[in-house]
Each structure stands twice: as structure tokens, then as C-alpha cells.
Image (cartoon, rainbow, N blue to C red):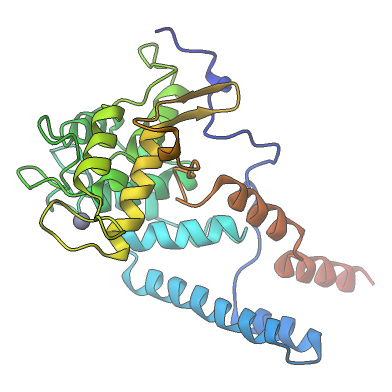
Length: 304
Ligand SMILES: [Zn+2]
């Protein structure tokens, strides 16, 4: 099917400019303290806020220590983009490192030369999408690798070559296809479908619905395994990806079985509801930008 114009394909309608188009402020302990002291009173909200900010700081500390792993890069890029604090310095060298983790198979490993793995591949590509550097990868090789991970008999995905099918890769692997679709569309690939992702969406839904559901509730890796929260989350996330293609005018749903099987769409980059992404972006766009304010104050003081 002929591809539509390059600008017409997006995951979801977005009236907002990208949250990370400008370099904004740096998270530092002083800023956290300033905001709490501004309140002048310790409230439940400010205590909870401090906990959240501590957690965010933990993510960034982990990133600083262990940023040579695509998973940490994705966590940091995800939080930083939603909270509008990306600076060029924060992600200096990240894209180049992730690109080095793409190996001869086409997927991404934990470090250069390591076996390609669905979790690292999703985290690596999603981090590059956030940083707008997905061109750093060989996307066609990645596409070949991930589409070869959908099992012909089971319909679900394996995480690595020659491994067994596993329900959680319904998201880590199938979730790569929307990211690849957009990246290849932006490059003007004329062979792209405008109604289907590049995997067998019905077959994946069959595997999740028939093989991964625990009769007592919850979802699991494969028949014979126990249910758990991790597999419940990622089986459902993968099911949502398999049900919904595109958004807005280009929307094509494929829901297997009864209409009650239909899930809400999930954002392919953040794996949370698209409206929550918009809410977070809008909220943090309105927040003051300490670094910019400090620079303005410094420059006006210099001219006084
Ligand atoms: Zn699993």
C-alpha cells in the first residue's frame, strides 16, 4: 500500500510541540529544596513530592553510574522528556553508545558485542526515539531481527534467537514495531502499510488471550508458568499494541474475539496512556525553568 505523506503519520494527535525541543533546566538538589521551602509549610503533597523527586534523582544517579546500558538510558530519557529537563549535556554520547550495542544480528545487546535481546532493544530504540537519534541505528537490520522473533507456531515473541516464546516480549518486541514504523515512515519508505504494523497482530493476540491468561486472573509467561504482575503488565501492553494501529485519521483497530477484549491504547514510547503523556508534558511545560531564570537574573545584574 502506498505510504501517505511523511508528515501525516503519528502515534497520537499531538497539539503540543515536543517537550524536549529546547534544552531546559538541570535537576539539582538545590532546586528540590527551593521548591519545598517556597511552600513554607510541609504538606502531604510536599512530602510526597520530595519522595518522587528522590526517586527521579535515583534514576539519574543510576544513569550516571551505569549509563552504559540501554535500559538505564531509556529510564533517564523517559523521565527527563516527560519532566522537560533534557539538556544536550545530560545525554552526551548516549546515542553513540546505544548504536555500538546493535550487533550483527540487528538487535541491541546490553553492551557492545553482546547477544541481541528484546528488552535492551526496546529500551535502546525508545531512548533514541526520545532523543531524536533513531537514525544512529541500522533500522532495516533491526526490523529483520525483531520480525524474526515472532514464533511461527505460537504467535507470541521470543526474547532472543533460539529461546522459547514468552508473554512479556509481546510488549518488548512487538512494541518495537510502532517505533520502527514511524522512523521508517519519516525516512519516506514507500513500502510501509498504513493500516498494519509489521508483525502478525492477530497471531500475537491469540497467543496472549489463549495461552497467557490464568483462569484465576492475571497473565503469565507461557502455559505452565505462574502468573505475576510483571507478565500481567507486559502481556496487556503487548495486547494493546497488537489491537491498535496509528491514531487520529489513520486509525485501524484489529480486536480479536469479543468486543470486551478491546484495551485502551498505550503510548509506544512510554507505555502509559497517551492522555497521561500529554498531561505530564503540559504540566511540566508550565513549570519555571530555574537555569533560564538564573541566567536572566545574572545578565540583568551585569547590565545594572
Ligand atoms: Zn517473560
